[in-house]
Length: 81
Image (tube, rainbow, N blue to C red; front, top):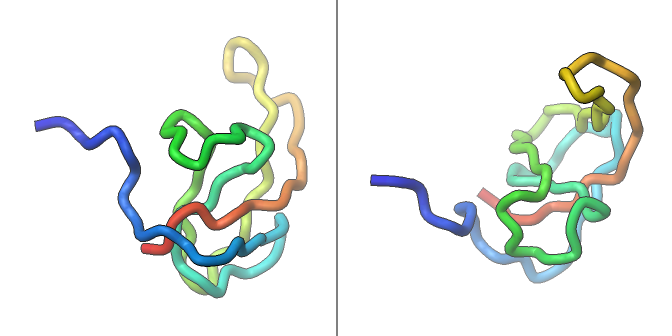
């Protein structure tokens, strides 16, 4: 009764990018393209955004989870929901 190995969502025909601070238009699962070159990598950092949501910063955390900073990135739509 576990989850599948691949995240849910339909494959895309073109790449859609969303910069930190921009409002989302296409609802779906966005990932950091610098995190992994493999589109099917389930361990890559991803976030689900709905229309109107604002793309978040990527947080930089220490070894114990303490906040060290944030980084503005360009999120890439990995799967449309």
